[in-house]
Image (cartoon, rainbow over all chains, first blue to last red; front, side):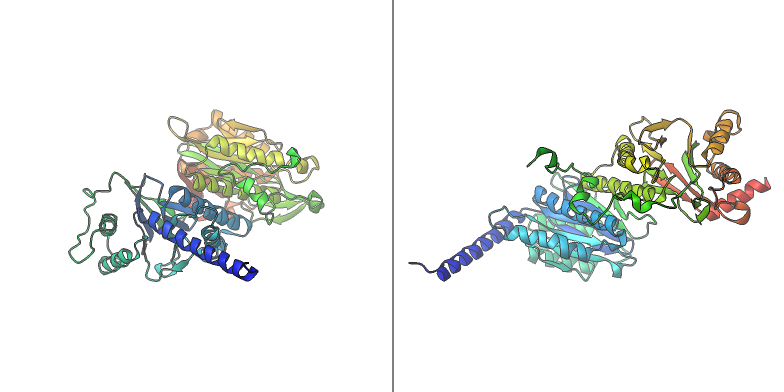
Length: 246
Length: 266
């Protein structure tokens, strides 16, 4: 006869097993997705991804944007959750009260964690970076998040989001050595797309890796999605889709 | 569950259907008695076509009966990059309507990844006015707005002017619209100028149109005690905005002063 304590232990073990399996399943699904980038610059925050057009880079609120990768339906769910939470907060209080920290801590992260741990529901296959533009690059907030609700602030103004964390770290190091505040937009884009190509093709990233040529870069039949949270604009809406975004 | 009390499915991109799920907000005052007593209202706001789009202007005065409540009220409100609203009537209700529309338009654009059509925008304002009918019937909280928005369904996108009655009926106007207690005088001058003026308002450039709007508001204030807060002779200027496809532009007090001064010298 199995005691009540042993039954509970068994259920707990099964739950932990299920969580571990879900983690592996989500990781496997995300390994097919290509990276997205967010970069704090003097003129604002630049967000870059490669997708099907309006599939990776999104406006969330006046000063907020999202770059995400994963299952399109799941990206859509987290995007809608963020937009609803931001607009309700902005309407009920004020647009200044819509902050990345509160959105992430009280709306998005709990939603992702609950979804991940609800073992009888399919998990959300999505990761990305939420951004909030400030008065200066030092005031910018970039928050990377993972499918299980974990999130962290990026302190050096450069986010490279990919399920392949080792490649993302290499790409960040490579970019950090080459990106300068005065680099022009094409130079920045060439460097980001070089990393996109290397990571998408599983190539080794090193000193021999060259910046991509914008007119000849192979995006695998997809389109460049790019937006700027424009720090300088006098308008309250800072998001500006840039050419290349379908 | 009784079908009439069953929750309605939420419409995609509709901010208003999201609000009841979060009862912290109050779209419109649910207790009109709370507004009993002195109502703050009266105004002159106007909109007309000039040669690059629509110019919308309003005075700054709010009155409560015979009292001047404020001479610093902003009555022209940009809702998004393609629409403007001029409010006349009770500011408590009108400002809340403008804020609700502003959030609704942006919510739709961001969540649906496309802008709301002009027809949907004018209808959204109609809907808010219809919801406000109980307040109107009690003689308080009446709002008679003017709306200007860019019609992208036209072969050449251009801004259009719409006016409303307090019950929510919406009409598009060919040339101009005015609302508020001082609107009678303004409409007469606009009609006269449109027919016999040289230049007619629709042929004016931005500077001429701005100066003309200042003259209209100053004249309205001369005959209507509830219109005021605008007098270029003593450096008090109006709320003036221009609307053209993709651009809402505020005409600053400095620009108004400069253009008014040139007009005076000419």
